[in-house]
Length: 311
Image (cartoon, rainbow, N blue to C red; front, side):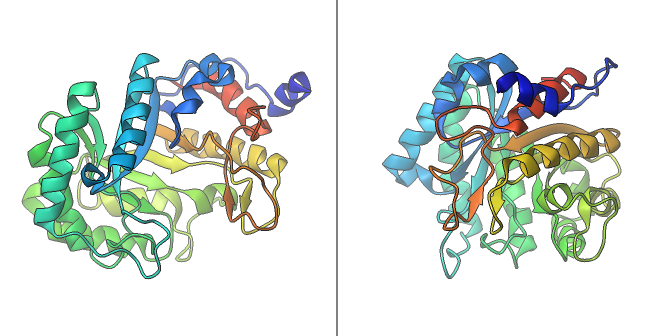
């Protein structure tokens, strides 16, 4: 079965490696123990953490385990700040700039000595689940605060989803940042789920895609580079569960990265760990493996395509 899946993944012909580093984001440290994960020999991962996790022992314990296990396996963590309740209705309140600085500074002091020097100021800032959705000005302030408390760190300044209105959000964010600081926003994060899973070949107002996001950011900072901080093929997002579709979309994810290789420097696909079951009640599943740890088609696509990229 695994041999068949590997053949379906379609290994590309030998070629020069594309200068984009690939990693897998997840929220569970058990990923690192999987022999299938270890076979990939990846050196990058991403973990999102609640902005006020320093006050939550359970959240800290999970993050501590993830960071320690990643480090023990030689994997570098991108720690991305996020809302304290992604499923809240209504959204969790927007943290004050002062509160953000204080809590995030504490997280930096905890994890930077453990090797975490890659940070994201705020995860998917323009999405409706995030309190920053209607306040790019505050998101810009968060970035400046993170720069001040994480000297020498590599920071994803702005992180956005490829949804309608993203270009306006980027414009307002840079306007709040100011022309004098625009050059400090050297890395912009992109979540291009719509583009990947709809296999879009060009952007539209409804689904702008990578090209339009890059153009919007580079209008303010020509030197900006881009990371796909969260991307991948969906096994389930409201629709029926379909691992074959997810594998096909994972191929397209790599095709898009290759297309935009002039500007993109990293790709973090999400995620390793699936939901316990994928059925009608499941809202979201992007797992690269089955609940029992057996690789899905997307895993074999990743393993094959890695030969043309960097780890």
